[in-house]
View 1 (tube, rainbow, N blue to C red):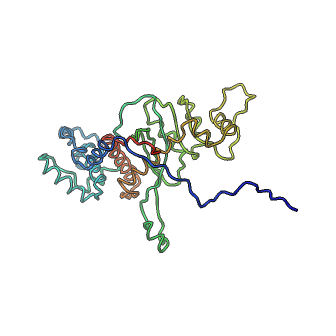
View 2 (cartoon, rainbow, N blue to C red):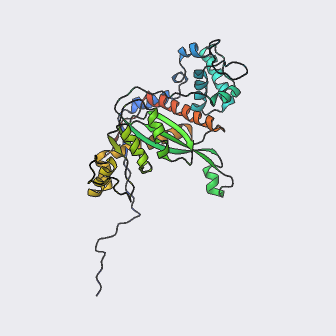
View 3 (cartoon, rainbow, N blue to C red):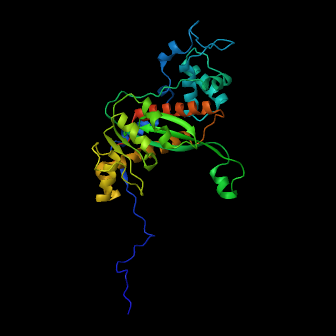
Amino acid sequence: MSKNKNTQPKKDKSQKKAKKKYGIRNWKEYNESLVNRGRIDVYIDKEMEDGWYIAHGKDKSKKPGKPKKYSDLAIQLTLQLGKVFHQRLRQTEGLVKSTFKMLELDLDVPDYSTLSRRLSDLNVQLPTLPKENIVIIMDSTGLKIYGEGEWKVRKHGWSKHRTWRKGHIAVTPDGEVRVAKLTGNNTSDSEVFGDLLDQEEATIETISADGAYDTKNVYDICQEKNISNILIPPQRNAKIWQHGNLKSKPHPRDENLREIRRTSRKKWKESVGYHVRSLSETAMFRFKTIFGGTLNSRKFKNQQNEFLIAISAMNKMTRLGMPDSYVIE
């Protein structure tokens, strides 16, 4: 008589783990911050009048033709309003003109052709707060620039080549995007890692990222910058890089891998606080909810600055207030 080897009852795969429900402690304040995101005066500073134009003789560009009239501040603020209120360049020009008229600001507005031309060489600065000993969370997402929408593809299949860009961000747990970069969709996350960290001036204490960053290049950069806590899960088939018989210090990745082997991947993530990484996914979701998942510009340089301008607007929004959430038992 044959014995049944499977003595344990099988788990029902159809039963999904219930999602955690969250509540918000500061709902009144957070609700007010969401309302304020739609206020024009959040993005327009009355003191900007002094820096709206380039002073006579201060245009340092050596290109032939008429000197620049508007400062980078004027171009960035105008384009930022267009991104916030989902307007193309011509409509953005009209939006800002009417806004200045209501605010009684005696300022000229860049026309749509000037906005398009200046966007490519704009030096976009992200508004960030001074911080020290920060936690940086890395992530990336795809942004479409050409091709059919998701509904058409699902219904009829795709008929044209769809083109994407890849947006990379480094965010802190409070939701502030510290640095960002747009690349082609064939650029890996680990390739951009060093460029992003080079832009960060604050001392980085902890790095958290997913398995796409589990490369020697990433760890080398972290060690060069003296980052003490590296929360990157090794690949499932990972092997020890630096064995214990060597006299050098234990490699941080090997220490993580040994702990995973000793306990489990799930317990390691819980013990080191790896799940803070989900906040970068939340930031990407916030970005696409506010601005959509498509870039309007056609030139790559313009797309890069369009992405940064949207990120700078999102930082202004998050600074107004963020939810203080908790798990509902």
